[in-house]
Image 1 (cartoon, rainbow, N blue to C red):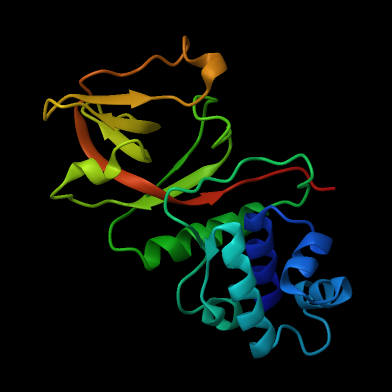
Image 2 (cartoon, one colour):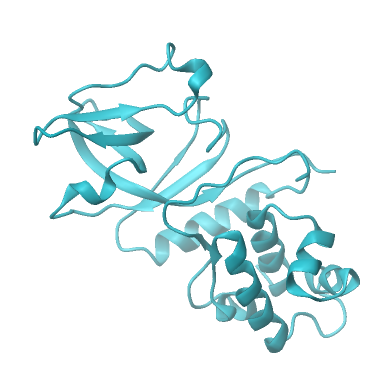
Amino acid sequence: MDRGKRLRVLRQMSGLTIVEFADLCIVGESTIRQWEAGRGKGLSIKGAHKIVKAIKSCNLNCDAKWLLDGGGSSPEFTEGFYPKASEKVHEIYIDQQIENEIQYFCKHTDKPVFVRIEDVAMEPHFYSGDYVAGNLSFYDDMSILNNKICIITLANNRTIVRRVKFEKAKDNIKLFSTNEKMQSEYPVIINAKIISIALVSRVWRQSVVQ
């Protein structure tokens, strides 16, 4: 993936149109288009640092080095932040781009896990067709995951994405959907027997090309 494609991935993650992204970064719309297309001299070092600084306001963290040559830390949402779909976002994560990003994430993560969302249980945070990923960890204090959305593998080897709630009793773990309209179809899982758990830290979303 070249600089232009990496920049486009970052902009898509922000949920901003080219015009909005240009305004955020205080550069011209034509400049963003040229950078994404790889025309002219392409994205400069100065431009990469400017974008990385501006994108923090969208709850995104990214290394300028990743934008420039694919090294460093790839884009990640701020912990606890989950993007919502927007009607004004019409760009697309091309399937190959998603695959490349997932491969990069797995290569640079200690114990990676990713899953494709197959239902509507976690709307409006995640939608069917989204890919989410995280880092499997063993937590001395599981309470740090309380009320967070996680990727969970249950004792029956089923992997789901749910909001985790720890009750006072040590082993009393409840798993919630966030779709209020569908909570009867996706009921709370009580006393869940968990094999592994990972806080969701990355999201890839496909949408319709304008």
